[in-house]
Length: 421
Image 1 (tube, helix red, strand yellow):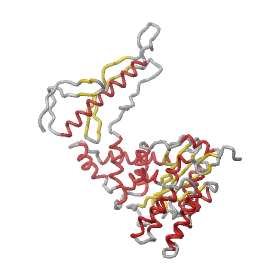
Image 2: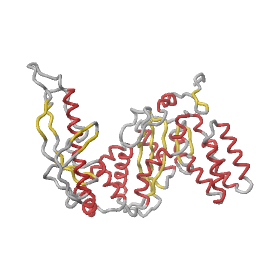
Image 3: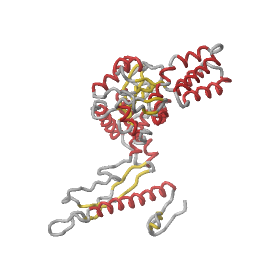
Image 4: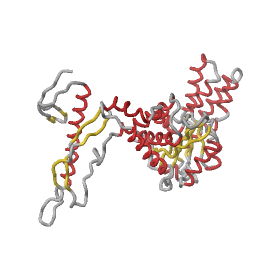
């Protein structure tokens, strides 16, 4: 790449123009990207401190001296990022005498790696990269001599295992969870020959509309016994009975749910059900059958959806009774969502709200061969789940959740205000 020798950076009309000083040469696209990131980071840090200083302008002692003021720079440090190492010199603010202390949200104290790097480590591990090979792999990402040593990786794994152990024992009594989704991932660990082992995952949405992972535990073939253990753990840690559970129809989860949380309503996933029904039909009929199934769950009310099921039965029952049975055996549980707010329909009639986020983990482990031991694998999945959570948005129509938790009845998605609860 051609060398660039420019002089300064300017900010004009909200657009940032950054330039290199005369001592800096850019010889590759990676170096150009890192330089741009360094300049952007410097600007962001200065803006953050400027905002803090403006708020602290009125903070003064009895003699009128400022309690918040600039005090040079911290020692330069190197941050490992997804585009390689970036050196940064962070401005220093002296606010020791003020009641409000300055703590940078952009560049927290002691930070040495960005979140993308921390997320990359469990991904590598779950794809079978050994501890000893991490240094070489990370050098390809961060640059020569910047890889993580085997000792560093071992220490990080130990820290994450400890975090996971504490997380799975955390108290859940402070929040109320309206809906929960359940699913599982099938893995094979180095210390196991049993290919039936899987990771059981429960995700919930609380009264504020925030989704979060509630459980990540190991089980055997999503059996009722394994699910019961997971649900009992949630109940023992204070989770009250949710109003609705969403999941696939073939899991032992449902029998366990009826035993642990008997008042929780059940909703079968329409995506899974559609796939199951189509498996019982010849491919030439898939487009027509899929359209008929979509018309059922997209119906404006429950009565019309039930008529749609009736039409499906009339069309396919004679020649394809297995396809009809697959649909009708769970007909009641497939239409439960009509008894909840219409704004929530798109979330609660399928497991898509978690499938899209859960796919991040599922894709990383789908082709995995012989990953690490169960304990470490669970810790790595936990770390990935924390990254996934950060990208979640509130449930659409979350303001309806308090009404659902209070037991407000709904008819075809609408509140029945005058009904007796």
